[in-house]
Image (cartoon, rainbow, N blue to C red; front, side, top):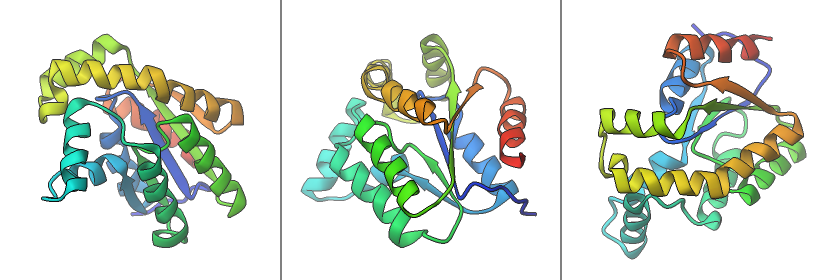
Length: 190
């Protein structure tokens, strides 16, 4: 059953293994809409037997964020072409400050309401959760260390950008998935 929220775009941000994917599924099941994940697009692209695919695989397995031009192109296309009249739950977008600024600018320009949830967990918990799930090579110790470095270098600044715009809600990502869901749904229902 779908419930209503005023937000047409819901963004989940946070470190690797912070629960973004889990919460995206819960939001979609409750409020409806479409999932948009640059992370999923990177994983799909990394399977392509092309120069682009091989480079994406190298970036993904090394723990690097994708270049801004790719992330911005995919995100912009999703907002103005693919899902312009649908609710979208965004996961793994606007990780670099320029991408965050573009995301905000597009939303203002097309008058589309959005909210950003920052699922906050410690670096130590990232390492423990990644080791426990061992999903693929990105959960290796070396890749996790690089992804945390990328987070602190770039994504932490994007989070601050959204906080300064008044569109960011900090969520305690150390809680159980149900407790995190309750925190998020409180804001979405308001």
